[in-house]
Image 1: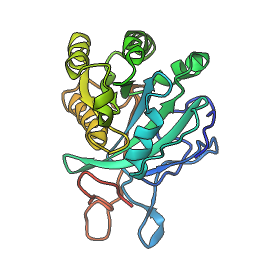
Image 2 (image 1 turned 180 degrees about the vertical axis):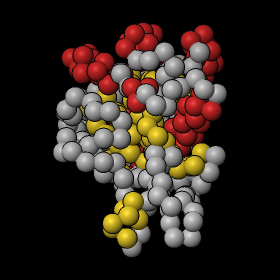
Image 3 (image 1 turned 30 degrees about the vertical axis):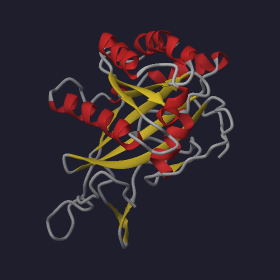
Image 4 (image 1 turned 60 degrees about the vertical axis):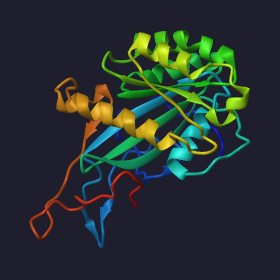
Length: 255
């Protein structure tokens, strides 16, 4: 998959029709984010109850793109070109029996792209802050990434700290306890994961979504304001009186 530089970020849910579990180029062509009801191209189904916009941040080479690829496509790509600008992926999950669409922006880690990355903080409901447990310097740079995130993102954004490459524990340079302590000190959710083996990858994305969903339920997010990185979905009643497309697969991809 080729890296690319996306245009200026649009409001979550605009400009694309996305299948769950895929990574595609961002298109600036106008359109709505929805799918057609089965067998009825003239009637929409519920595409999602909510759409959450994510951003993945951290130093170059920590495995940000591999984490996204493992989550959306359930595969590992050992050789991956450096991300130039941002890449995009999307997938449907289920929380509290509600279909939730995750719209995920994978950003470049190089300093030369930090100005582009900063523009994607705005309008993000969640962020995955990633370091490589085998490279001490990527852990040492977390404070700088977190400062950027909190300066440019909304105050209620949920940040998940991920220590990636835990399959390489024999080469570990950062202890689990250090990652856990950093997360505790800065109010982050913490998890170690492996994009290669898929360990905790699913859990990292879904746990972040669960935290965002709880904030919605607690009234912390104003869901009418899409700049918070949350978009409310819609449903059209079907002939049996229920909401079309209201069923979904628990915790997995939807077709």
